[in-house]
Length: 63
Image 1 (tube, rainbow, N blue to C red):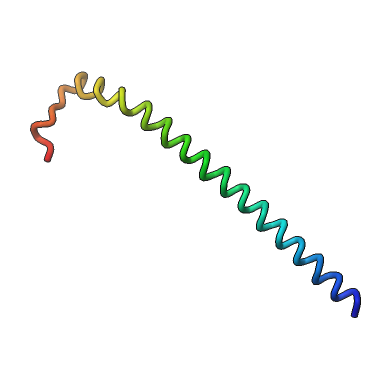
Image 2: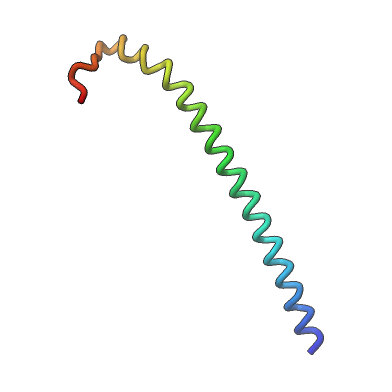
């Protein structure tokens, strides 16, 4: 019987460690995604004006 209790306790610690590792990875992924979104919008903002001028686009046809 004591071996069963010890295995159960070890499994609980493993589960907590897994959850902690998962949350850290999730936090890193979400933080990285926010930085990438900011980078993309920072690049597209100035590039959009240049593209509009180069392609001869106007806003008159847009709703």
